[in-house]
Amino acid sequence: MDRIRAFINGGFETSDGTILHKINPVTGEVIAEVEQTTPILLQKAVDASRSAQIIWASYTNQKRSQIMIKASQLLANSLEELTRLEVKDVGKVWSEAISADVPCGAEAYEFFGALAATMTGTSHRWADARGYTERVPLGICAGIGAWNYPTQIACWKSAPALAAGNAFILKPSEMTPYTANAIAEILHEAGMPAGLFQVVHGDYSVGQALCEHPQIAKISLTGGVETGKKIMAQSAATLKKVTLELGGKAPLIVFADSDFDLAVQTALDANFYTAGEVCSNATRVFVEDIIADKFMAALVEKTQKLKIGDPMSADTQIGAIISENHLEKILSYIEIGKSEGAKLLTGGIRQYPIGCEGGYFISPAIFADCRDDMQIVREEIFGPVMAVLRFDNEEEVIKRANDTEFGLGAGIITNDIGRAYRVADKLEAGNIWINSYNLIPPDWPFGGVKQSGFGRESSVFALESYSQIKATYIQY
Image (cartoon, rainbow, N blue to C red; front, top):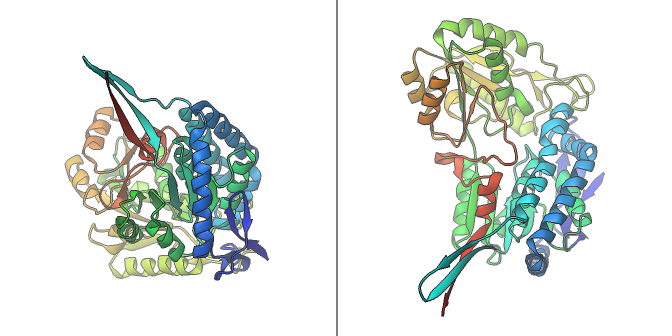
């Protein structure tokens, strides 16, 4: 049985708080005891952050850059170990974690490490005065992570914060505590001051304590809409800066002129990657009526061939759902879809793969005959459930695609570049992919509009959100 403790001031700290159980989603077994960080221990982390941030901010941009680049190299060298922990944490398949989910952490530190060396301000001149502006750190920033991408989220949030000269405290989801501690040790090994990057563990109450703490300047959350609203309310008393990356119900629009095989594969990837547990997944697939029957037949054929099972196996394509409660939620939506009149073409059945019989698995589901007003079309399920909807023309599908409270991602599959531009211009989403989906290089912003949140992860826009402008005016 593993014991998972907070990482504070450069080392692990024992807590006398509540013990939470970490369950392996692949087997259903308890594999670790997680020590919840107490208020006293959290204050110790904040105090250590203050001291470390002063040291870190005193470094030249070049020195911070060098340490972060070294951290990126150490993260890259730890690829297999971090992948093993991520699979253990989430239950996602090895091939996904090692090829994309985990490497992007090292990429984030490389990118923001390079940016750290280039941060500059502006110079101004008047007849009898001069002035200059500079970007200065906020102080102590905190990140509250979701459970689906623990390595990515830890690095996406901390790298721009550190590049801007801040200290960072991470609270990972209590369901995925492993990778955060490993990352903390790696960053400390890279030469960051003790206390600069710290990890606290626990349930929502620890997150609330971070939001309400007067010495923490910013909160960045990845989570659900209702959680986002609570984070804003809890942060309001101290006027914290807040970044929210929340839920989605993204549309994927497939036009008849598209590359058919590309469209089918993109729809599968945009729904069933990480067993559908991705906030930006395109779970509303709009297909032009003229190709809809052929398209759905191809989807079903390919979906039924996907291998479900042990995520550590190289040929497994669909891994486990994060928890039994979440699996039951997904299964309840399957029943809701059928009761609303949608036609279940395939999947939606709990699975018991050989060697993983106690785990949380479900066969990917595809619904046809869907209407825009159905619950399975309007609500975020966060599982491998695809709703296919037919459309007749461009104007119609744009209106229907935008008819949602969410606005995180959207996809367009077409060979008509003019149409691609026209439709993209009118879609209400923070990220739009054309003839691809869910690709987010480190220099590319990611975030939503409407109830999908505000602020951006990744890219120079994230760096800006972890700093503030200071203007100095000098009278001759």
